[in-house]
Length: 321
Image (cartoon, rainbow, N blue to C red; front, side, top):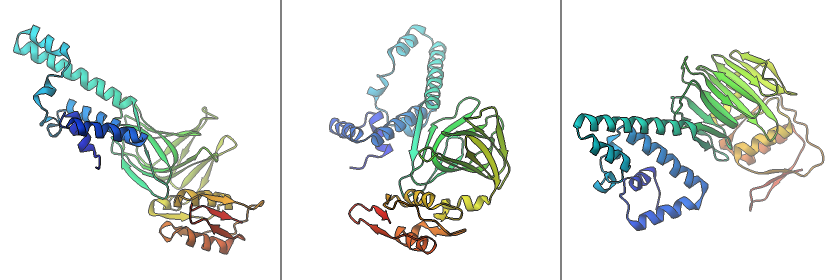
């Protein structure tokens, strides 16, 4: 049986049988991913109830109404008057709304693009995010306060919804990127110590954690990289840096090791180097289409580097010699 968000909503509306509830409990316990889906559905359900979403609350059974906090029922009874009851009910709703929004802004959700896939999502403020294969974003269900803050591990392209009163901040292991509304790419690979920001439109401010007193402002077609703990600026072609959104790997200017890391991420495979020396990659420019597959990609790369490779078809692991 497929567990959907609508099915979980039925549980919140007390519309499931005991057997169905037991099946749902078992499904939640199967994996952390299932538990996360359940938690996200709970936050969304509470928010819709607080904001009067009739589609969510219209089928609530009478016995659910009886489960309201006793303190609210008692206060309404004591008040005695319609106006007083309405006032208390309104206070309860406002408090519930405040509490729900506060929790939605504090509790971070997460989304991860599966190996070999690209994920596109829209955040609560209308910002569009493209996640490259294997990358993760942490974000609140609701942006609240003076800033819109998310965290990224890996590579992502942002099309930030403009809001002059609330800057949008992307936090990574190496740097914070602050914008108001713009389009940019961030590549934050903690494991390999790689970090860069490429600006497509607008402007961004980048501040390295290693030197918080210094920031750089990027213009379109500029790229900021972290080198020895300091940010450096260089000109680039932003459209080349973000071709991965269209399923294309730009291999120009990469070392062989960097390219193998890129292939692992893009195709969702393990690549093992069995040679003591790293081959030299002689390409100065080139592109690979992910849809052509890893075998074709390696055959193209062989034209610009001296190596051989074999694949373990049982595990999918590729060995480079």
